Image (cartoon, rainbow, N blue to C red; front, side):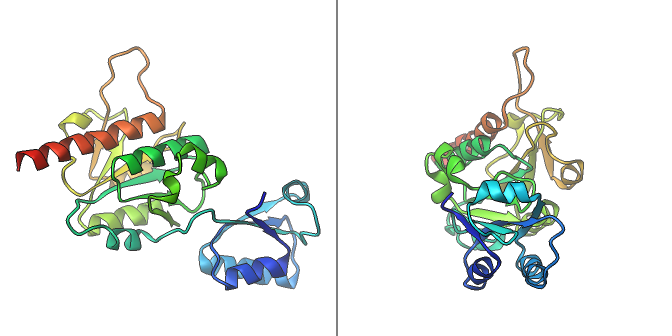
Length: 247
């Protein structure tokens, strides 16, 4: 894979040079001085760290990896604050927050829908989320190279930040009695989509301003997360286009 760097010094130098790193893989129980130093730098920079068996590292790269392999970011990430600051002043914020979406194809499809809907950014967790890799970019039809993507160490803190900036935070969940089509999406809005199996975490749900469901008529009572995200996003588009026409 051409987005991997291995060896302690090369990884350290890449981080110090300001290159964005998705994740650093360390050999389990490796305790050398430079490895300890590198772990500390990763923590300071908010870089995800994963402890793996040596066979995993050997599978990732060929060569003397010294117990360290870094996966470099395929795109340049922004902070949520930078994403909001870069939004055109005459546009109402529309943001997608992914709380544990792990499948890269779902991630890519959501990014494609978000970019097509004119969303201003996607926010993903630093851990327990799908990576921005070649497959995700392909699944997004290139949208992940166009739409701002933000990484955060805490989805819950990010929800609070979005609310402090005037966005209503809407959770998509089939368990709600409130329907999407009865929800005002013309307001500044962040849409939260949850994990493919577990949905949105209970702690995050408690923070949301509203919980809404997509109405279902058929026997199957749920949509794939990427399909559900598209419905949510384009309901916002429908409402906002209608509002602009009426003006």
